[in-house]
Image 1 (cartoon, rainbow, N blue to C red):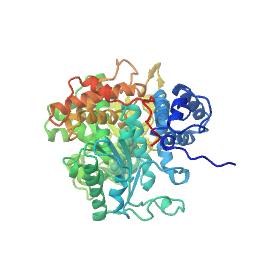
Image 2: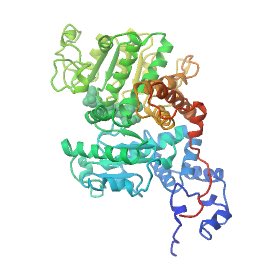
Image 3: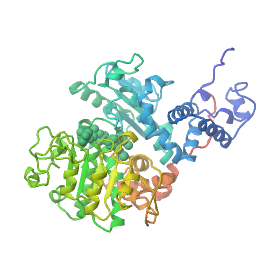
Image 4: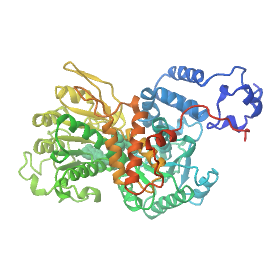
Amino acid sequence: MGRQPRLPSVMSDPLTNRGTAFTAAERDRLGLVGRLPDAVLTLDQQARRAYEQLRRQPDDLAAYINLEQLHDRNEVLYYRLLTDHLTELLPIVYDPTVGEAIKTYSHEYRRPRGVFLSIDRPRDLRRSFEELELGADEVDLVVVTDAEQILGIGDWGVHGIQISVGKLAVYTAAAGIDPARCLAVVLDVGTDNETLLNDPLYLGVRHSRARGERYDAFVAAYLDTVSELYPDALLHFEDFGAGNARRFLERYGERYRMFNDDMQGTGAITLAAVRSALNVTGSRFGEQRVVVFGAGTAGVGIADQLREAMVRDGLDKDEATRRFWLVDRPGLLLDDMDGLRDYQRGYARPKGEVEDWAGGADRAGGDTGHAADQGIDLLTTVRNVRPTVLIGTSTVRGAFTRQVVEEMAQHVERPVIFPLSNPTEKIEAMPADLLRWTGGRALTTAGIPVDPVEVEGVRHVIGQANNALVYPGLGLGVVVSRAERLTPGMLLAAAEAVAGQVEGGGPGAPLLPQVENLRASSAAVAVAVVRAAVEEGVARVAPDDVVQAVQDAMWQPVYGETPRSSG
Ligand SMILES: NC(=O)C1=CN([C@@H]2O[C@H](COP(=O)(O)OP(=O)(O)OC[C@H]3O[C@@H](n4cnc5c(N)ncnc54)[C@H](O)[C@@H]3O)[C@@H](O)[C@H]2O)C=CC1
Ligand SMILES: CC(=O)C(=O)O
Ligand SMILES: [Mg+2]
């Protein structure tokens, strides 16, 4: 076993490394002579080899690890692979496999990617960024999580860094956000996950989750620091706990260029999917009755955006609010309940409304489908409300039972049913079942990717209602327009652009664009977002030719000019 020669930084930095694709002249100029086997491969050939290696992995988690290792060696090659096989690989680097990877992070750890900020070392916060030596105009996007509610799998402490990494991979693969201009961050504020705290190999801060003033001050210091160091960057918040996600967006959304993906991104993609479903049914937003099962960050974020659509459709805000029924752990949310969260209160139904409901207000969940802890359960709600739209953001697998779905389908011709919880182990119902139970009448999507399904001779292609179909284009639009803020008009423009990308219609057609067309649909979203930013007066750059400006801004996974020296 010999000595491993030191590799010049041009090879050890995944942003500049091209491995066996360095030409003889580059090897000579960059100090790589003797560091590589003789052959010079093209990016195509490298991609073929990398894909062969990937295909040999025994399962999805192994494929994830293999891809992350490539990510850490050669970013151009990694993104080339991702863009060439987007439909196949998005579920690996992102939802649902990223959930598995997050659970096993401390054990599968190989090398760090991203910025780790510890609440026990607040004085290191600024330094952690400064030592990256990135200029004020060199960062477009920072994705941060505190990992309290990762997807639907809960609190994963420092492991959450991989959701920031995964979200960024999608930004680049889907919308060509330059990976050299992005940062993934975790705020490691401790964890209440006892499995992690009792694991000797756990890599995070080893205490329970900090809350209250200390936690708030840490988040405030984070925002202060990143916005000062990178004044043009979009500050993306991911997978914070329900109360915090909303609180920070409300407190800071006007002050910083901030985006909460779980509220705003999920709201926008769901709005797009409902828009598309209404194109099929020929009805209007203002006519819908919406039941949301799981009134947390995503559920209420969705309700807010659908409510705005109803208001644009002519309802006043109170009328629109009355078209929503939110069901959470205590059952249907009623105005006399103790313990409602601030963000739920506005949607709580008057207690009097339910007194003569079949089942009644005092009825415990019991035999009526998925049991609520107490109060009025989902089945009773559906039976009495006769919703046209049913949204699942509860993390409760199987909550949309056959009974619930058949009840809904008795009263509407085309029930719109979106089980949005991630990952697969949390989904409220599989779209195939929704279609079978309704004889193909359900208009459905899911947060995870699912295969087409044939029901009664019709092949149904299921769109993926995941915020990944909207946030990359939204981010690109912010980058191109250098928007000062992310406004409701920009979110709406993004949602409408996604819905506008849906082809054709016809029996079994998906409600959302296909992932294989994600680059094109993200570009269309970006164009709409730039135009909205200009119209709303928040754009600091107003390109003459928006379409071309968006194309020009998209980073491509190709080897460009080589660095002049190994640096
Ligand atoms: N498809 C997409 O793009 C997105 C999907 N999601 C998914 O939505 C789910 C929820 O995520 P968040 O809103 O961030 O979490 P959250 O914790 O803020 O909300 C979940 C809500 O469901 C409620 N819930 C839990 N058990 C319940 C039960 N037995 N009955 C009724 N309600 C119950 C909780 O009390 C909470 O209010 C996750 O699975 C997540 O992956 C979230 C964001 C985007
Ligand atoms: C997709 C996403 O953001 C979530 O499930 O939390
Ligand atoms: Mg999320």
